[in-house]
Length: 228
Image 1 (cartoon, helix red, strand yellow):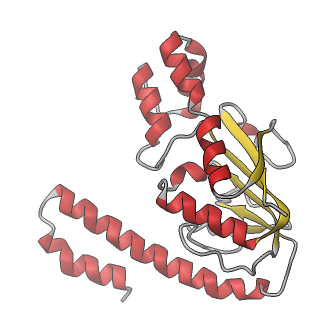
Image 2: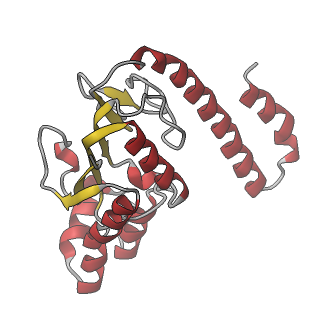
């Protein structure tokens, strides 16, 4: 019997409050994540000794052909890895890292700092790091300036139907049902990338060869380089 299932059976009777049950569920899910990650690390051995790799970090159901698609949960990934942990690739073996609507799911500064440090370690000198995140400047300005554009778009499929008030929409942007861990704008993301040692950090336009078209509205795209 899997350890997570065994712990659930043993500890569930002791978890008599909603908070205790929630904590137990999170703990069991972390054990499952650990098991998936260890399996992914074993599978990653086939990439040892290779260079010029392209990593798609947090691919979800959008894997890229010819890339190493990484996702802890999605079965279409090449490797099921936890981005909060060390990346099982050789130093300097990666020529490009791409992450779209994933960085906001990492706790800051603990997990973001480690993820960026690992990316720099495995990236070759001059390699590019591309990241796309929900742009938090847009909803905040829309709220303050009473601009309906953002809220109309949010209610047209971006957010659940019950988010029918402006602050509901702002909260969903920040939290997305508890999945989002941090909000980003150009200023904060630039500072974090530079603090991690990246250089030539800049905002870029939507790139149809890299980015998902349906995520273009409201997404902030930055590109940075690993110093030579």
